[in-house]
Image (cartoon, rainbow, N blue to C red):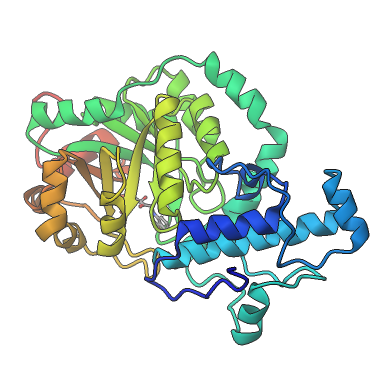
Length: 401
Ligand SMILES: O=C(O)c1ccccc1NCC(=O)[C@H](O)[C@H](O)COP(=O)(O)O
């Protein structure tokens, strides 16, 4: 019996079988589908094996056997599922915690008791990505109440078809000989503050399209980037033809449905905050809804993980450390060297160089490293005329070539 799940250190793999077996015991008749952050997983639990972990009164056992869990049982179970999810993430080397650490609910007795006694955990976010992720988790819970998934699924059925994001990048690369440009519509960022005061997202998007952008990236996060879904919708409704990336911090499948209903053609999946299983599932869901997925990595470990996942066509290498904000475009080169680069070429994936690209030399540098697309925000959005900004970035007008 695995009464005590061993605490995993970073880099060690926590067997999924062990996690599911333990979840099985903890959750009893409650569907994991509802509990693991809304992620629909294959494992639907139906067994009513008695829990080794939770102390229940005879009365609550009776209630549960009748399918009526007490609210305190549910709190304990939800908390414990969060803890297992953290363990799984840690075992994959993910340092970003998805939620602030919380104390065990009253009455909890189980494997995490020992863990809690041992360590002092920081209860403030350790970097900006973690802060954004914690906020997003809360924000998505609120948004889900206002826009239930059933309504979104209906809206998706009636939504117009999506545009071919990956195809647009390949075509632009072949047409211009330069990496296909994903031009970012971004008013502000945590590292740079406000980038443009008089910010008209539709005007900027139209200027980017005239300037030869293959695709656009639209920030939808309000709090940290001053973006919004209304901006994505407005750009789509204005008749812009470029495929649109919904630039969000996805922590829940609900967001994929929501992005689809708001006019997105592609979504961003950030490996630093998602487990392999989550990426796999979100990728499948995106494809099912007709969306492309840009899977973003920051380091070699994340690149290795992503290369082990089937079905990824677009990999973004972010040159910005989300922990220190330092931008270093040699990160793109480093991650495309050796075995990883070989696998990427073999799989014919499109690599997108992201962040910190300002000059034709920067573009030439990441192109020589192997990228077929670039994602650029600051250097073009700040220009009075973003259309000319694109010509400046590439050293020539790429709309005509
Ligand atoms: O830009 C930030 O400060 C930032 C902070 C935390 C998470 C993500 C962040 N940026 C998102 C991006 O990756 C960039 O918007 C994108 O790659 C374009 O970068 P740039 O051309 O340097 O504006």
